[in-house]
Image (cartoon, rainbow, N blue to C red; front, top):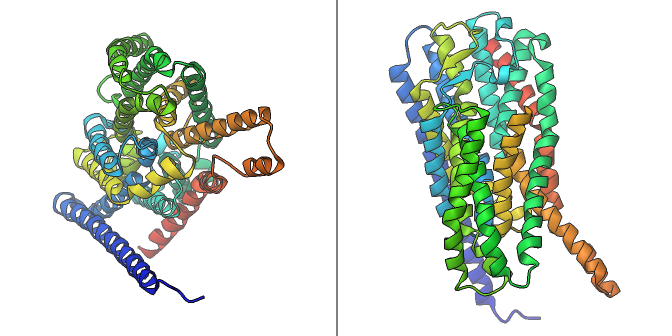
Amino acid sequence: MVDQHPVNKDLKKVLAFREGAVETNKSVTNLGIAIVFLVFVLIYTAMTQTEGSTGIFVIAAAVIGGYMAMNIGANDVANNIGPAVGSKALTMVGALFIAAIFEAAGAIIAGGDVVSTIRKGIVDPAGMADEMTFIWAMMSALLAAALWLNLATWVGAPVSTTHSIVGGVVGAGIAAAGASSVAWDKMGAIAASWVISPLLGGVIAALFLLFIKKMILAKDDKLAASETWVPVLVGIMAGAFSMYLVMKGLKKLWKPDTAMLWMIGFGAAALVWAITKPLVKRAAAGLENRRKSVAKLFTIPLICSAALLSFAHGANDVANAVGPLAAIVSAAGHTAVGSGKITLPFWVMAIGAIGISLGLMLYGPKLIRTVGEKITKLNQMRAFCVALSAAITVIAASWLGLPVSSTHIAVGGVFGVGFLREYLNSRENKKRRLTRSEEVKIAHRRLVRRREALTIAAAWVITVPISGLLSAALFFAMTHAF
């Protein structure tokens, strides 16, 4: 059959070519901006940190630290804002703007005052032969973690930056001081968190979604039910985030006892409930009595949760980017490597804060789409449950002394709401009289994409081993080359 529209075919080819050219130019531009940032870091440290014979190592470590920070921004921050973007509560540009500001603010205002020279005390620094061995080990760990994060971002897998740097430290520690230098009991707890984190996040998110379905969506008058329960849920969110921020984000500035922490949580919950109740009633007055109207009521709370999660992440995880760098700066200044804790200089913190925000702006959209859109379909209610689960799970895990990953929790929450929807749909379909063709069609309809689930799970399992092996290889290569 002769093509009746050759012009249309040619036009499509031209448009496809133009789209490819735009994407290529964008990639080149982003790479150029990233390189300019790293060159700036190099120049700054070369001008200010060249004292002593180890100055060159501080300069190299600063560049690697900046590279690591950008990779954290590209990969890890997606978990905070991905659900908000996937649910259409925020546009991609708006989410990037909010997250970049709050990540940087969290890192600079409430970032850790001190960091352990070896992340979580996993490796005994006293086992290092000398100062230079320690510096090589930390540089290897930092570079290995950054390279693994870069690869994970490229394949579209959100992984734990904490686990990446832990693996790097273990690999370099074994290469530098032997397997006996590793605290294997702590490594066992970290391995357990691979299972604990996503399960806790998924279960809590699913329970909140189930509550919303039963108490609001299943009611005949959904808006009346919303006026009762949405302020309660938003109050719970406010209480949880208040406790989360004090425990994790503001630990540099203030460390209240348990009683005060609970008072803060209940006080914030009550205050926000009182403020939200009339606002929800006013917003619901002009809406239709349907599910989409209820979802709209969660939009503003969801945006606030994305901002608060970003602030807490910047405050809590900046040490993953610059902790080893700070350790190298301290060692280069002839502080004993076994002294346990070191001061985190402001310029080191600034590299981490700027790098995380820059990496998010340049390379974050890919992982944001993975978390927010590719795993399962999210609306504002489901995304709200994921964000609330992240805050509550971290608080619960901290009290129980469980080492959990915020990345695993957030992604587990997304899986949790997706699998709950699958289960409820399946149960509902069993009550209906379906034809054979309908049963086959429904059987193949899955609300959680298995391919994404398998890719992410595989990346989680291999994060520590891969970053450890890469770190050990880099340590041997660097020490033999120099």
